Length: 637
Ligand code: WT7
Image (cartoon, rainbow, N blue to C red; front, side, top):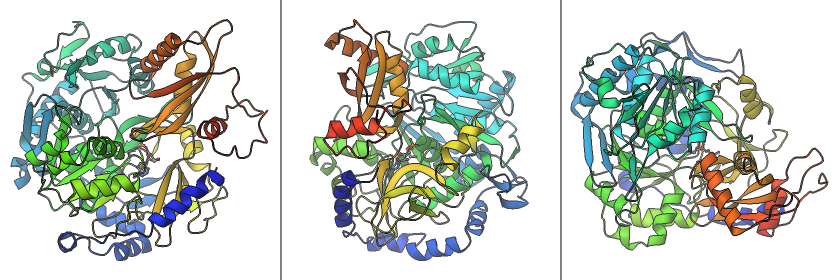
């Protein structure tokens, strides 16, 4: 795994690890936390106490009896006996305070439409929807699916579910009808939220059409609630569909908040793994809000008045934690943009930063690289004086993109927080803080309270500068609690690979200063433009086509998207490979998974390299494709 192919990377990394940026005086003077190493050291003397103190920043209806319980490991528990509610902390707690009048959400779409909601307005909207959902029979523990564009109603829907104690399951709207149906069925969701459409690159995407197709296969869905976003003409099934504005019409603007147990599930979010079936990652009310609030406050150095813009989509964990819950828990303003970054021109992003005076900007390496391609002249046209802190997430950032981001977006004033974390971790895990010395390309050290390590297969730490498996060796409040309806898979995926540690699936190096350099995944998970896609899912999409017998998918490096997919396909006897068939197969993958599964290349082959047990050796396919040494092929047949 980490043999010859990685040696070159290691030399590069070690060279890069010497380059350092000290925090600007102004940033340091203003920082809530001023000494990176001291705060980490202190937190690690007693991580449980550290998180207990963090939990005091939130409102609890009843305090916890015990902070941490490991008696049923790996089903760890936090804040046992505590009663709370995630939505209460994001919204209700601000009502009657100064924050009430502040903007909670600033939204803009590609066409330039804009909406602003104060905390008070958002609170009322949520209450109306809570009452409407309750009237519809939604109760604590029920599941509600959400398949929507990045519009304020997605926040309202998520918060309303949390307030009732129903679990939301947000499905990114870039997934296909088939992928949506699978996720609805796994969660047995009763209600589905969607919209008539969304503008992207000037065209309307008709989400309702995908939804109609999906729910043909979903027996559990009782009602589809449709937001009128584009005045797009959509088919309406009077028995099942209801317009959002009719659904909430006349509903009272006050609603009771459910008192949840700290360990009650708040939501499920599906993510790709190594099999073709996505995993429903479950997060809970108590620990999740503690992890998210503490990280957003410290990593992005919030003082309380920020305008925070995270460019992710609410359909991913980044959106859950740092578009919706994080900013609202912290009582700051969150910016939502529904559109592509280069419309009408490649400075759209920087224009929004200036227009809304964004202070914290959190994005993905793939967006930075896409902007780099257009050239520095676009960010140079905008001074963006409001920016203080920048962030990146989703995949490793190459030092070149880091430097560009630092120079042209941050104007050498703003530190970059390269935050490593996962759907499963709930909040930032390895990241600098604004007071830290930065190294372009490194995610820094573990966040206070987190013990991460780079180990070999046996769980033994590898020497400094050597590659190995990235693991987390203690527990943290916002960690995944289980896989929905599949606790066995939870144990197997995260706790059995490396003894005594949480297995991240990533490969990393640690340098002499204790900084982590994440190299990417070790398993069969791809990162296409930061989106997580399983090779097994892609292969099963290919195989669903009548002409395909078998397929092997790998990720190949791409200068902008990080990785794109190449597939090796064995056709049924008698079927001839052609460009027309390639096109058909691409369409088939799009239908099965969605447009996020970008297939760069398809190659028709007669045979795939396999182990004796019949598993496709993607490692070999990849090495061949990239012209790297094949490594150990002794188990090949
Ligand atoms: C995987 C998790 C929660 C973040 C959004 C993606 C990769 C994430 C970084 C980073 C290098 C990163 C890892 C991780 N990743 N952030 N800063 N540097 N790699 O969440 O879809 O659950 O993916 O994204 O490979 O395991 P996700």
